[in-house]
Every structure is written in structure tokens, then in C-alpha cells.
Amino acid sequence: MTDDLIYSCNFVIFGATGNLATKKLLPALYRLEVAQRLPPGMSFIALGRRDWNDEIWRNHVTALVQEHFKEKCDDEACARFIARFAYRRGELNDIAMYQSLKAELSTKTNSESAPVVFYLSIKPTDFPSVIKNLDSAGLSQPRGLHRVVVEKPFGEDIESAQALNRLLHDCFDEQQIFRIDHYLGKDTVQNLLVFRLANTLIEPLWNRNFIDHVQITVAETMGIENRADYYDKTGALRDMLQNHLMQLLTVVAMEPPPVLEADALRDEKVKVLRSIRPISKRSVHAHAFRAQYAQGAINGETVRGYQAEAGVEPKSMTETYAAAKFYIDNWRWRGVPFYLRTGKRLAEAKSMVAIRFRNPPQQLFRSTPQDAISPNWIVLSIQPEESMRMEVHVKQPGLEMNTRVISLNASYRKEGEAQLDAYETLLLDVIHGDRTLFIRFDEVEWAWRVVDPILKSWSQEHDFIHTYRAGIWGPLEANRLFDSEDQEWRNYL
Image 1: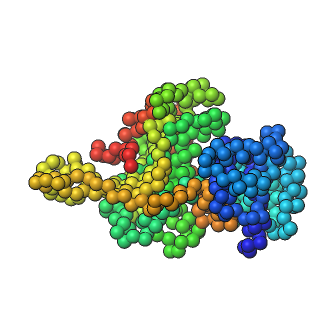
Image 2: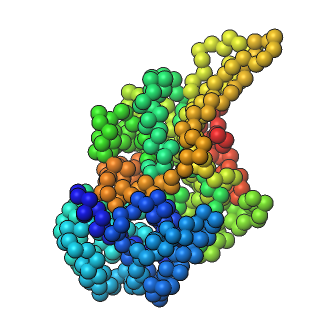
Image 3: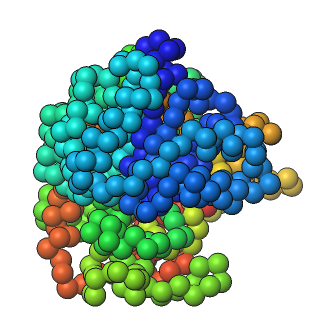
């Protein structure tokens, strides 16, 4: 693609006044403006249902930027940023809005070959309507040019995911479809590949011979934040585990690709998903656990339970905590359990991958039993901080031959280096048409195949769901997933 086409790119945000656009997209795009990474000729059209005009929208964006960045707000960059925008009101199922949008886009560029990005920052239930209307208005033409960005969850089960994919392919070519998972844009996740594959110190240990088990945790302190209409029909398994956590699992477990290219990386990730041992109906409860937060305290403030949240169905059985155990039946990982968990209203907001190594075959340095000696860990923190730590044993000072654990900080970010938001990376990739960090449909499909038995089992349980007090690390009953008594959830970096 030539520089002229990149610079004439336009960006359309469906659901521009919504939660995702407000909290993620607009701040990330502003940071790209500050860094002067947005093409000079690029413009944005914000689509929403609110009865606003350009002036109200630009005042809204200005206030949002000033509130989000406070003293770090760059007034000159903010002025450039808001000047790129036009606001248009419309309903997602109104074909006239799409025809008007097409006419407006045709006036913004001098070339019929200029790409347009359509970002679907909307509820997944609205995806089909928008995709069909884009096609009906001719905005999917010419095939292969424009780009459509689809947020997770991609479907609500394997059947709906396949139906959505068929619809997308009826209107767009595969290279136009960007299935976004913002965890893949995080520096720590990308750096995990370098950490594993560029260091001869690490890669020989990354297998069943040395690793006891792997834990992947995505914990949140917030509740559902007025999103009951979405979350109560989705739950933690669909919202987080099927996509974010499964993607992290594939990055941890994948084989080295032959080349560092988009399809080569995806091929290896799909191999991991296809190797996950199927969960039978009878063994779902041995491999998965769900629960729902009850009233408790977060940061010293009392918060309501899930069933008391506005808009939640009475006696809802929707899980806000999901944990699962998976086995990858291939040569590298056979017999190593992968424990995944995610939840809302937990003790801390934290995302991390923790790899626990096996104990040495014989304990020589202390008279205590071997199973009381702390094992070695590698812990990769994704948020709130980005870091990598290795825990090793050293001798304690003194006359006794006793050991203690120290942490080797393998953080890759130097002092003063800016931390990029995952959306900055991914949005810039969309603008330039780079699909390396985006998901191919067979990844989505196989991830649904993995969790489908759990979904079907839970959908038949209408009478009881475990609860946990808001502000703790989840229910103790989730410990039943562990294979041995010396395994437990790691809650600290």
C-alpha cells in the first residue's frame, strides 16, 4: 500500500458515545495524535444515537481528553485531534444513515482507492445489522479495500460465531476483517514471545519436563458498571476466558513459528487450541468452576452484590467468576495443567501469567521436607505493571546451610520509557492494514470448541451458583480444580 493511500485513510466509529469508545478508543487515538503517528490527511466520523452536533461532540472529546490526561494534556495536539472529527447521529438499523455516510466519505478523499476503517464499538448483538447495512449501502465495496474491526466476544457460542463469520465473509474478504483482542496488543504479551524464543536460557525449560503447571489470571476490582444488558447475557466465561485468557494460553504454549509472520503465528496458536483435551459432559465440574460476587468491600467502600446491580435479572445465574483447567495433549505439554481464572470484584486489578517449575529431585540444603520448599516461578505481569520476574533459591547469610527465595526482576522497560496502551498498537496496525496481532477465525472457532461443553453444562444449571464476597480473591471452592495439594492460586507478583 502506498503512502498516499495510508494518508487518505478515514476512520468511522460506530457507537462513538459508548463505554468502549470513551474509555479506550478515544484516549488511544489521542495518544497517537500526540505522538504524531496519525496520518495528516486522516479524518474521523463519530456515529452515535445522541442528538448532538459537531460542536457538542468536539466539546465532549475535549473534556474527555482533559479529564483523562489532566496536566499531561497537550492543548495543541488536542486541537488537531478534535479538528479531525465530525459527528453524525443515526440508528444502526437505518439504511438512510449508511447511504448518507457513503456520500460523505466520497467527499473526503480524492481517490476511490482510499481505505475506510469501520470500527464496531457496539454491542455484539448489533454486529449483524451493521455488517448487512454496510454491504447494502455499498460500503463493503470494492472487495479487499475497506476494513471492519470487530470487538469481542465474537459470537456467544460456536454456532453463532460461525454464523457471524459467514455473514462477514458474504460482505468482506478475510484480509478486510480485523477481529480484535486488545490483550494481544500489550507489550508484555508480545515480549513473551521474545522472552521465550530469543533466550537459550529459557526455551529449553519451557516444557513438561520442567514445568509443574501454568496459571493465567485476569482479575478486576470493578463490577459490571451499568452494562447489565450486555453482561447478564454474557458472563465471565464468554466475556473474558473464551477470548483474552485463551489467547494468552496460546502465546504461552505455542511452538516457535518458522517465520515471524501473521499466518505463521496464527497457525501455531491454532495447533495449541486443537491439542487441548476435550472436556466430557461428566467431567465439566472437575475442570470448571463458576461463582457470582455478593456484597462486600472494595478499597474500604461497601459495594452491592451482583444480583442487586441495576438491570440484572432477579435470581440471575450469570457467573462473574470463572475458573477452568485445561490439558494440552502434545509432546511439549502433555500432563501439565493450565489453570485459567477471571473475575469481577476481586481483591486487586491484576493480569498475569505465572509458571511454576517442578521441585528438584532431591532436597539437599535443608532438613525440612521437600514439599515444604518453595518452588521456582516465572511470573509475567501484564497489568497494572509490565514486568517479568524469576524466583530462585539462594543461601541465607549465616552459618547454617539454609535457603531463601529471591526475585530476579527481568522487567524490560527502562526508567523513563513510556508505556503504550494496547489499543494504540492495534489501532495503528488497523490504519496500516497489518493483521499480525489480530485473530483468524479458526482461532475463534477452536476456542469456542474448547469451552462449549462448559457453556452447555452451565446453561442447564438454574437453581444454584456459588458466591464470593466482593473484595476477596474469589471462592475457596475453586481450589478443587488443582491436581495436587501443593498447588494453589498465586495472587501476588
